[in-house]
Amino acid sequence: MSLLRDMRYPTPHELALAARAMADEHPARVRLRQVGESRGGRPLWVLSVAGRGAGEVLVVAGAHANEPVGGATVLELARRVSGGPGDGTGWHFLLCADPDGAELHRTPRPCSLLDYHRHFYRPPGPEQPEWAPSLLPPDRLPPETVALTGLIDELRPVLQVSLHATDLGGSWVQLTRDLPGLAEPFGKSAAELRIPVETGASDAAGWASPGPGIFVMPDAGVMGSHSEDTRLSTWCHRATTTAIVEVPMWASDLVDDPAPHPDPRGALRGLAGRLAGEAARVAELREGVGAADPDAAALLRAVDWTLRLIPQVTAGWTGPGTPAGATTAALSSVDAFGRRLSLRAAAMLLRVVRAQGHPAEAALDRLVTGWCEEFSARFRARPVPVATQVEHQSRTVLAARRCVQTGQA
Image 1 (cartoon, rainbow, N blue to C red):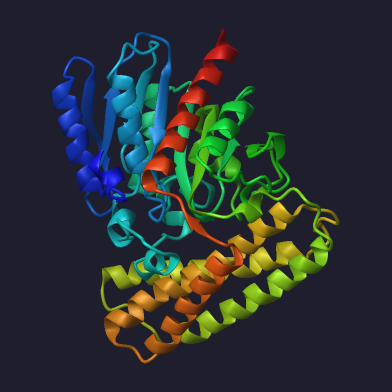
Image 2 (spheres, one colour):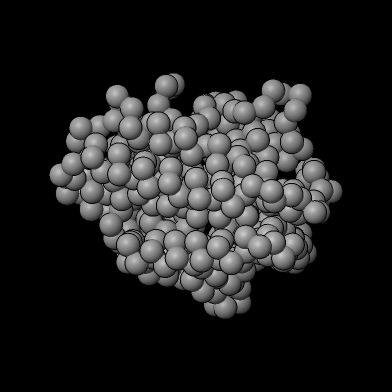
């Protein structure tokens, strides 16, 4: 695939063109259909490969605008399952769950963390298709969420997979219920491809872990770094078995270090103080910046939502429930999570002030540039080629499907 060889992430338009070509090539088995529209009127496309009654699998790409690898992965998976006899499974690929967000996050070929953040966009939680049900009443859900839940209602999949990516770190899988046997092929793939396994992912802090990098969602009450109730997300719609597969754009071996951290509580206090200070600097520069157009309004909503989230995060790091014991991997994951929050807010604000010629541009540019350099240096970041990201996600999706089949046997 030329997009992979060229180290590019496909745009929603390119995904639709490639999917249409695949449907034309295999008209008896492959179908492309529109299942809804985004708030901005962009089509939501599903590419389906017919099975023979062995159950349906739904794979969702592009739920987070800043995590574009999923689109390339669904194309690769569709090629693999449409090119052979298969096992009877029906496969359905939502090419991009948030095409409006993808239009604002424009990094098809990021060469560095700074390059990635120059055009960064991640919508606030209520505007994210998967998270909206955990934050909004049913009558206010965005059309992207309505289309996704409608697809789940229609297909009743035996497995849903949501493809995600972290900017810097390792790979891990979150599950709504355990899939025995997944840890072995997941770990083998990561090792072969030189992708570190994130053994203490902050997104799944406190979750059961049946194997390195595999985390099983609790029934209630433990949400990791999420401020929302994960059980209300589309991952759990109709009690679907869902796997959320994360892969890094830049890898760091620090997130795979099992050594006990000497002072987790002290480290968390330090990380909370740093994050609070960084957020205050961004908030100060945010004062007086207004939205001159719809893109600026979207970016500023995301900035404000992130800044409101940060005090909740720091309170969780310094509260009475903070762990007395934790691994270096777990603290590294928390460190990375905090760095990306303030960096993202600054990067999106920089996009707005740069377009307006606002006097805050120079100060924000220094912040974003410096924080990207510090982030990369602290974690000794190394790039993971797009083709490698896609291969690992594809292997993990297929392994999850095999685990579901084994459990049904």
